[in-house]
Image 1 (tube, rainbow over the protein chains, first blue to last red):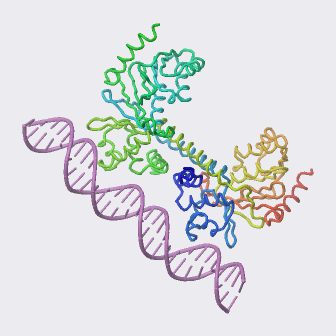
Image 2 (spheres, rainbow over the protein chains, first blue to last red):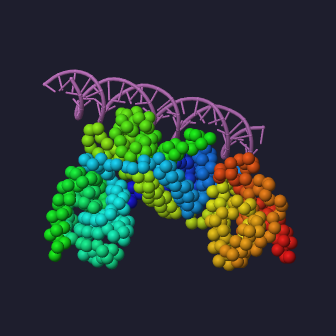
Image 3 (cartoon, each protein chain N blue to C red):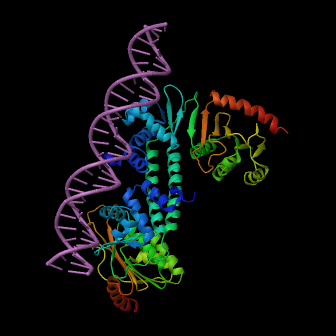
Length: 265
Length: 265
DNA sequence: TTGAATAGTCACCCGTTTAATCACAAAAAG
DNA sequence: CTTTTTGTGATTAAACGGGTGACTATTCAA
C-alpha cells in the first residue's frame, strides 16, 4: 500500500517534470540530483539509473532551463536548485505561457458565438463541469436555480453565486445541509433555499441548474460509492440552451412546478 | 514582417497547447474550433488541415481535458470553451501540478546542502541568474553588495533587497542611474549607493555581487548590442561560495578596496 | 425504397523522436 | 607508464504520433 510506486515523491516528481516538457533522462537526473544536492555524473547515474554517458545531455537540458548549475572541473560537478527555486521557475514559465495562450486565443475568438438551440451538449470531468457552471452563473441576468450535492458546492461556485447576486440576480438553491444553508445566507443574503426534488444523498446525482429559464445543466457522478473520492474525472454533465431546447423545456417544467410549491410557504 | 508565421495568434496558440501536453492534432483542432465557436468534424478539418478522420480522436482528447463539449447528433457538433475558460483550465491544472512537484521535491531534498568551496559554478539564462541572486539575497545575514546594469534591476530584485534590508542587512548598490537611485532610497531607506568600478553601460557586463563577504556572483550579457533585447537567454553567470573560494577572494578584494574609497566620502 | 454522399470507426504504415548501447579519446589516478 | 575514470560522439532500437485508406453506418434525395 504505502510502497505503491506511484505514491513516492520520486515518482511524482519525475512524472511532473516529464509532463512539464523534460525528457525522461532529464527528469530522473534532476530528481536524483535534488536528493543528492550536489554530485558527479557517476553519482547521478547510480541513484537515477540513467546511463552515465547520457547524464551529460540531461544536465545540458537542465542547465539550459536554469535548474542545474555546473562546476567545470574533472569530474564535472552538478548542483540542483532547491525544491522551492525549481518550482518557482516552473511557475513563472508556465504563468508566462498561459498568458501567451490566453492572448492568442482571444485574438482569434469569433465575435458572436451562437449555440445550437436544439441539442444537448456533454461535458466530461468535474473541473470542466465546474467551469461550465461558472460560465453560466456569470451570464445570468435574472435568476439562478441551482441544486447540488454538497461536495460539489465548492468555494469558487459560492463566489460565482455571490457575484451574480450582487448584479441583482435572484438565487434559488437546493440540496445543501442546514449548516451550509446558514453560511450561504450570510454570504449571499438574497439567496432563497428550497428542498431537493428527491432523495439526493445516496444517488449518483450531481447537480441540476437553470439560468434565466433558458439555460440548463444536469450532471451525474459516474463512479459508484466505492470509487476513490479524490478522482475528479467522475462527473458527466449535459447542458442545453434556448427557449425550445428539449432539456431546457423539461427542467423548466420541473423547476417551475417545484419552485411554486416549495417557495410559496 | 507582420506576416511572420511564428507571430500570428494561431501559431502561438498551437505551440503553447502542444507544449502543455496536447497532441498536434488536438492543438490544431482546438484552435480551429476556437475561431469557429462551433463546428463539425468537416468544418474543423477544413480550417485546421487535420485529416477529417482524425478530428474525432483529437476531440476525444480535448473533451477529456474539458476544453470541448460534444453534441451527440449526426453529424456530431463540437463546441470550444471560451479563450478565458480554456486558459483558466490550464492555469488551474498547471498550478495544481507545480504544487505536486513542489511537495514531492521538498520531501526528497537533503537536509544540509554543502556546496563545493573551491569551484566556480555556472548558471545559464537571465531568469535562472535572477533566481540565484534572489536566493543569495534571501540568505544574507549581514551585507549585500550589488552592482548591476539597470535593465537587470527588476521589480522582484528590489523586493528581495527590501526584505533583506528589513532583516537588518546593510545594502550597498551601484550601477543605477540617479533617478532610480532616488526610487531605491524611497523603498529601501537603509541602502547606500556607490559608483561603478568601470564604465558600465557599453560593455557586456551584467551584474556583480557579494553576500556577507563569502558568496559572490558575476554575470555577463553574452549577446552583442545588436541582439534582440527581449531574448532572456543571453545572460551567463558564475558564482562561488566560501571563505577561500577563488572568485570570492578576488571580488572581495576589489569590493573592499572600492567600497573603502567610494563610501567614505 | 434505394442509391449516392456524408459521417464515423478502425487498423495500418512510416517517419521522427528518444531511450539505450557502444566505441573511442582525453584526463586522472596509482 | 599503465589503468581507471571521465567525457563526447556515433549508432541502434523501440515507442510514439502523424498521416492515409479501408470499411461500416448514417443521412439525404431521388
